[in-house]
Amino acid sequence: MEAENISITRGSKVSIELVDQSGGLEQMEFTLVESKQADLKSGLLDENAPLARALMSRQAGETIPYEAGDLKEVRILSVRRVEAGG
Image 1: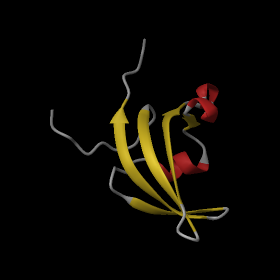
Image 2: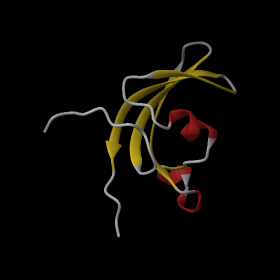
Image 3: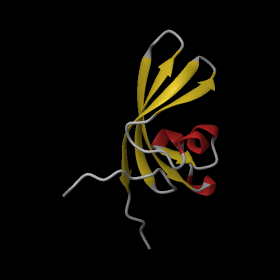
């Protein structure tokens, strides 16, 4: 199966690396969901959250500026489609 560039949308499973001002890195993985399903501890990020909105329509391999607290940018490591159930 060939890898394809998938744009981030609701239902995407996304792996990112957060980069802080001092160059520190933290990896996160989550699925973008509707507000009513959101539970970050369970890996479900609200599609209307500032981070989710910054990532929408982006693709793996992109690095985007993202200033929040000590963060300066986000690197998108991978994007996968998640099968929607029912």
